[in-house]
Image (cartoon, rainbow, N blue to C red; front, side, top):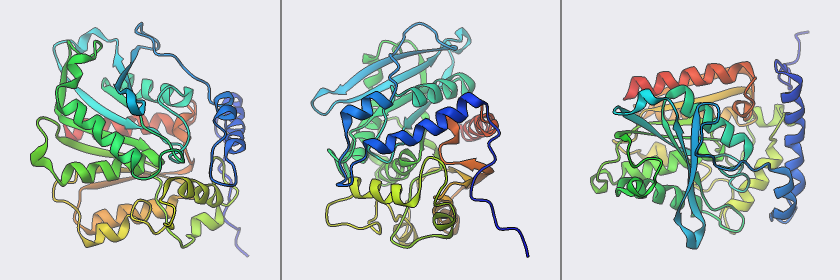
Length: 337
């Protein structure tokens, strides 16, 4: 008899990151069965990192409020390398993960990740603090992230001190996001592509979807097999969709189950895409289906798979595949500028 496929990734990572991986499961304690979130408890489980205009690991950060009425803000990451002055600098607009209900740009994992992207790609990273579910359901996150793109398109960067003296390459702008943020990348890219004539200077050169959060009512093979995987399970995903989708919707709603709308037709201007998947991610099969849907419609799309990677591996800096991912992101940005 053949060996059964493993349901747990090989842990090729330092002890500290293994402990952080174990602690990540504690976030489930803040998720109530009724679809609400215990924000007070979550604040204890989500370490906050303050913005710092002085270089930290080669990157300066600052926070900027775009719309105080809905707490819409961004954290801006700027490489401290003086060689970027006078050059056109790539801009990456980043949407964090967390099932639409957790985290922010100031959460330690995302501050660390965006700082690394900024430093290693020599890019400006604009990380969006969008409204979270269940307090703000669909389509609030999509609206907020689209509005940040509109803000950048309307000369808004002139009011951000950290960016006012830099040459930003908005003609080659990239969207990036992981998990729920990867889902947001898809929907915001489609909104942009459907109305390119209404944008003044933003042109999307690429969309980077890191283990994007898609789904449906059916159970895929990877969801069933990896029901005890690190970070997420099918049940946790069901809870996240319940908090985000309209009250009367199921997981076949267009926000989660994007495949039918792609099949009907996707915009001509939809940008080249990088889709990153992990072999031990329960969402693996949905992500492969997304890649195949874009490919069938003739879109330029690159699939990168890390066989040993679990969901959200990139927030663990010492995990070997994280360094490989940084190289892929850099290569994708340089190839599409």
